[in-house]
Image 1 (cartoon, helix red, strand yellow):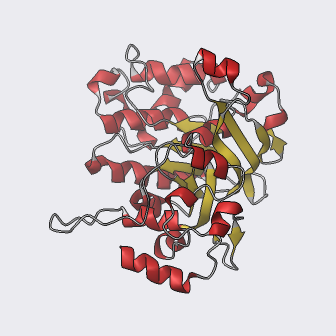
Image 2: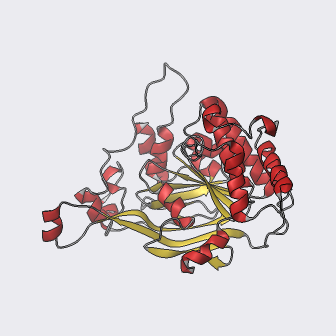
Image 3: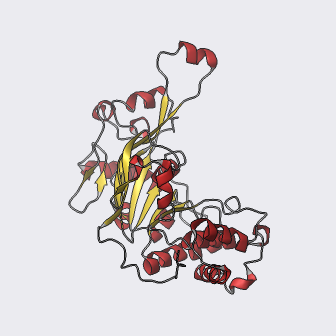
Length: 360
């Protein structure tokens, strides 16, 4: 197998607009219960970690998945990479349906689909040097013919992610590197495989604020130079607005709003999106904390939520604008002429916007 050269030529990719397509994807986890409860319970309970999610990812696009902890963002990412099996639904990488492949055939797609994990300290082996970590990737996937080619590939990978000169870093252990440098090593390991798309799962949340911007700019440069598509998982709308082309808002396993990053931030349509934006703190110590337009948070196992999963809007127990219609029927994800879609029965936002402004 020939060695990979780092180049900005990605014209060899197929001409289809979408590199990834997800259709009606679901993942339900069974709820563990006590022995006697399990014996006498008539019906086993499940948590819908991902509940009927559909979207497309275009080539050279960054799609942000934003929501609270526990909303299903990371589970969705692991489903897409075939790390866990779905309950139902289909995943397409270009023209190949991944959900229909056997495990032995999925390995061929591992190079094309990669993940940057949240914790750079845990994603690297502390007993291996940077060179040893990268060499393992090269040898597993057969990226180099000989040692000289392998060494050159490692050098290019480290320099591409800003670790220059490469010789100063290749023999260091993870304990001798900062958090930002460790994350760059993780990105170099992914970049060597030249994937079609990357899932960045909270890739800057554990880094100092001073280095977050440089890592985000590195991801943007990878997008433009190598034509890589990204799914950027985060709970931070500020960084999502900076890096993403589109943003999808998730709540209890569902996408409740999706559109361009600027539209989501400047024209939020769903009440949950508006609450997330209202929760963003102003960098002024004298500013008062906002009163969020939300009711108390409920567990996904709460009886109200359990009932609404089947009949009504899952956000109804926390929504201050909820009506009887919201309790009885699920809203569909409906898009406007600009492609901005949201799942809410309150389509007429004239009075709704006024109520929101009074709260925040």
